[in-house]
Image (cartoon, rainbow, N blue to C red; front, side, top):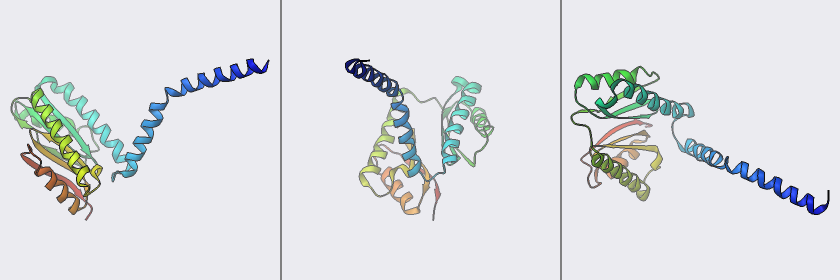
Length: 193
């Protein structure tokens, strides 16, 4: 093989490898981001994975059983599970909780569903906006590690979850409660002190 042909073959081989690896780049980067998130999280790695499984399995079971009878959100943090949303009856609200509990591995349930009409797109969008504003205020204030507090907003009510010190809980609550548009703050923390 001539030197020119060898260089060309090497360049072609390296190009192929780089193209093949480029498909792996999101996986590698995603894995690195997850590793950093886990390192900063106060939950164990097992609880982190359990929380994802609880949320996914519960939503599937609830949607399968109740389909369009509910607007429901499931948030799990350290196996403490918050149910938010709306349904037309108390029986369905209880049924949602039963489906959730049947998933297993849950330490505590907070059923904050309300009986009433399902939230519309504008309400859901406003809740997402409020969550983003509260999280931004946490970052700007820099009074505690913002990723130690999980923020969930439903119908302008902000629910706070996490494994925190009492001073962190107080700071998180104060910032959330003074955010324009927030009508109430519900603390669902586990305390380190």
